[in-house]
Length: 270
Image (cartoon, rainbow, N blue to C red):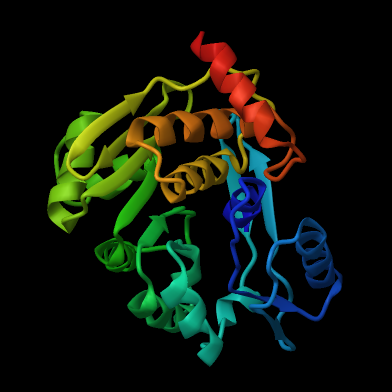
């Protein structure tokens, strides 16, 4: 949903496939997305489970720890015939590991993946909601993989002894035969592998207020620029600026306009 919000901010036309409960939080989600003009036509209503809840708290190392309630409505997303037309005509289909924690939604997810053009996996590993088998299944489906340093180290630790970031990344590309991948590295920027070529961005320095959602904003910026046929260099630059800007704000979906992102990118790049 964060990715969809930021794609809409980039004047794109995202839609979200999810399920909500008959409760105040579900109604609030509908109202928020309707207010911003993001498509809610594919929000299902579940009468047996509540709308999803996530509690995020920083630990002693200032890392965000998530308590993702289960089971919730989005654990039970049903296949609908309307999904086929939506997904087969979309330029990108974004998915993550959490949707596969329950067999019900996982089955629907893999049906959707069969119809998708370009499959973008934002892995989002949140213990204890994943295992090695599921992660490998999800990566094997991807055309483009996004992950952070911690996720890169965890996954490559399953099958390689590499300690260097670049070597770890290349080992995933080789093992899963993925030609497109991006590794976000927090304050150290990002690594993009696009059609066999490596691109690196040193990142933008900002006063960090809240990192929750910055990775989602980064991915939205990257996808938006790919939709605009931007070069990999320009796409990575803009995505890095958008991710940094959101980290300087409170909450994953603050109000902003794209001119603020261009100002940050241009000012920092001077």
